[in-house]
Length: 282
Image (cartoon, rainbow, N blue to C red; front, side, top):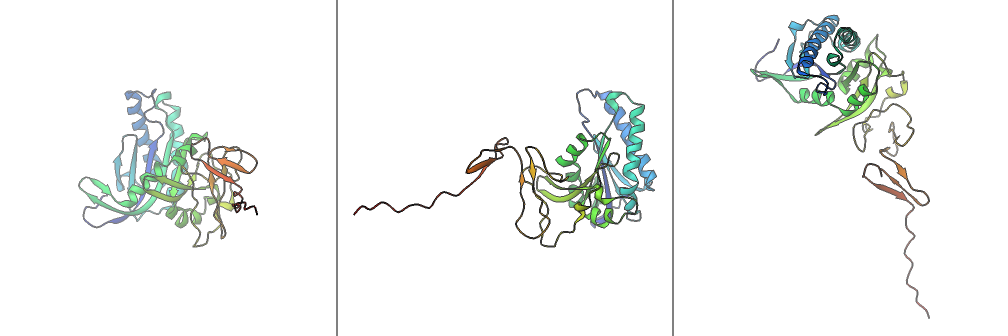
C-alpha cells in the first residue's frame, strides 16, 4: 500500500523486465499475451515468497513492472525463493504459449527510501534500481544463459541479505561494476535456474581502502581468469590497481597496442632512450 506525503519510507524494490519485448516477431497480439503472462508469473512467484500482491505498490512499465514491498516482509525470501519460483512460473508460461509470447526475464532487487505522490513513486534509490535492471552485464548474462532468468542485486542487498542466506550460496553470484549514465555501482549477478559454478574467491573481503572493480569500457562481470582476446585484471587487495583490457592486443617487440579493435588505443612499450648531447667536435 502506497503512503503519500513528503517523507520517504523504506521499501524493498523488485523490478522485472522482458528480454527483447519489441522483437520483430512479437506482434501486438503476442505483446498483450506476453504482458498477461508477465503479471501472472510475477504474482505467482511473489506469493511463493510469502508476499501478497495486494500488499505491494506496483507500477507498469510496458515491457516490465516493478513492485515496492513494505518493510514488514523480510528480504531473504525475495532472493532465496522468488527467483526460483519466478523461473519455474516462466517455464510453465512458455510451455503453453505461442513462441512469440514466450519470455525470458531480467530481475533486479534493491532496497532504499522511496517517496510517494498522487502519480506514483520516486527516489534516487528507485532510479538506481532501474539502472541495475538495465545494466549491460545483466543483459549479457541472460543472453549467454540457457535459462529463462538473470538476477542482479545491489551491493546493499548482497552484503546485508545474500551473504547471510541459509539456503542460497553467495559464491554462485558474480560481481559486476554496473554503469549507466551517471550511475556507477558494484552489484552482483546470479542465474537462478542455471547458476554459475560456486567460486568462494569472489567473496574475498576487500579492505576499506580498496576501490570497487572497474572497467575501461562497459560494465563487466568478473567470472574468473580471462582467455582469448579479452583479459581481466582484478584488484583484490593492496598494491597497484589492475586494469580491464578490452579489444585485441597487437604488436610485438618494444611495444604493443591495446584496444585496437575498439578504437580506444593505448600503446605500451619501452621508453625512448635519453636524448644524447649534441656532438661537439674539437
